[in-house]
Image 1: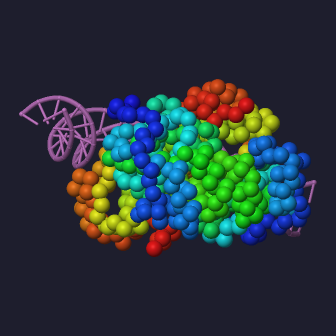
Image 2 (image 1 turned 30 degrees about the vertical axis):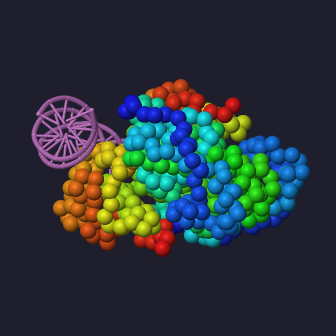
Image 3 (image 1 turned 90 degrees about the vertical axis):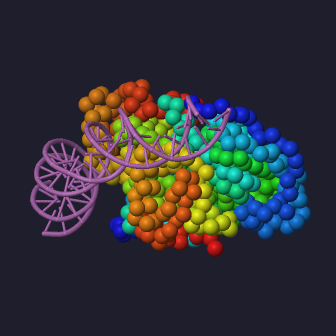
Length: 251
Length: 251
DNA sequence: CGCATGTTTGACGATACTCAATGTGTGTGG
DNA sequence: CCACACACATTGAGTATCGTCAAACATGCG
């Protein structure tokens, strides 16, 4: 179905250190004291870099860990009965994936890295133990899952109600916002996913996405050159997106 | 936007008792010992019956409780920028709603009852405390959230990849399965939601849903009479749904 | 440098939406 | 209890948006 890929778990090579990690404010925006963070550190393993196309975990694989992205980007997807994939999310540094595997004991979706990526491997059974002892950590996990639910439901709305144009505009705006929060430019960034993957995620044909990029560029909303994108008129893009401004805004 | 409705929290009238509740196997399929269940009982309040159209909670309302449905049915939905609603789920006895409010501190969606409904009101702060002390309860909450994520992602797939026919077939099959698990007939049941709500949920126009019901009936797949439905050929319906059989099967 | 993969662009057509009219059920008040 | 009104549901006709098919073009990797 896809290219060759190194299945299986990310190979742990060293202890990471949350208290020196620049992403801890995203990944653990909780008031954990230093002792707590040290305890968390002891269960987390940093992976060696995964190369583009490698699997973090496969659909149906037995659930063991959740993963925090340190660098790079990841897509998650489920495979349909006919063998085609449906991308359910793109993930960037500081975000957690694998949480949907808790219920059934196996990952209901696969996670594949879009570019060279490193992650933290967090064994769930150990995390669960700590969650019992550290209320703030427990609440943080629940907040993260809760947010995933909200985000997925926003996607339901997008797929159900929005036009192709609104979908792509919304997609770009949400990416922009996520980069902004990470301290990157909210107007110039690199799309680590292919047009095909964007189309798949948005429930569109690749040709439609391509045409929309062209149209947005003609209308002066964006400037695209391959995977590099420059949002030249964010306000206009908002108008095309059909989004309420400032719903998921975090300063 | 809608009919008159009694906003606000469900009025608690009495203590419920999980250990005598016939739904506890669904709502809490955990091996909680009796002491644990008693402790859970002390924080749960059973609401008096809510009438059709009443709100369990509104979008944007401050988050305080999650709710377990005891009898009846509930829809959750978000309201778009243009003021139209997008239904994100239908819920039946033994299921939990309100979990998406944990992250932001306010419910990102609204919940409205579709018929006369009673629920258990579970104050989250109390539940969270208990979760710290009762590992099984903690894991159960996470499993529930995890399952909600999986289910929402299945809906993404449906909205993104499936034809109108496949969507409705899938919808009926999933309802069938949920009723089966609850001990009801998997072939004959009552649709507590309107055609409009089905259409909205499935990302279709109401006319399309109506036409499909007619077509399915002509083809001998189902027998419909208003809200009553009889699935006369479940196997055929499966073929029309584009679903893998036995993915979320629980005996 | 050449093949493979990914992207753009065009022409055409199908699925599902919109508009509109008719039919059916449900609840309310006379 | 019936009649009316209102919401809900069905059915038909026409159409638009977006998908499919096809070909040219770009990009990147070995």
